[in-house]
Image (tube, rainbow, N blue to C red; front, top):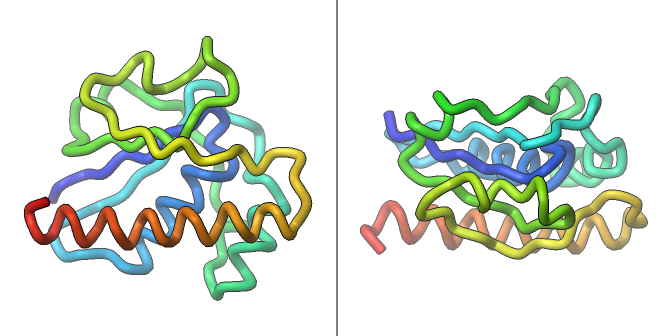
Length: 134
């Protein structure tokens, strides 16, 4: 099983959405996980709402702290982008892909929908690339 690690600072929005979309379109032989360098207490409620609108329920998810084991076991790590440079996961990971996606924290539902759709597109492109050897 190849593990794909999606990371952001709080693991409350972008990385949760990326993990959920990866699960939805899951290619065989892969397992997604998401984590953060400074996890929030809960998943962003606006993110939960935006994902429910596309039929994905992440309400029961809990942000988690990135561990050395997660890093070592992951085949590929994807950083969602950084709002907090000092806690940026890309600083701690080698060979990380960085998607530079805006943080949904404090954004309106309309803005979060745009971020959600951007993540969905990125995940689909990413799956196409890894399953076709690109």
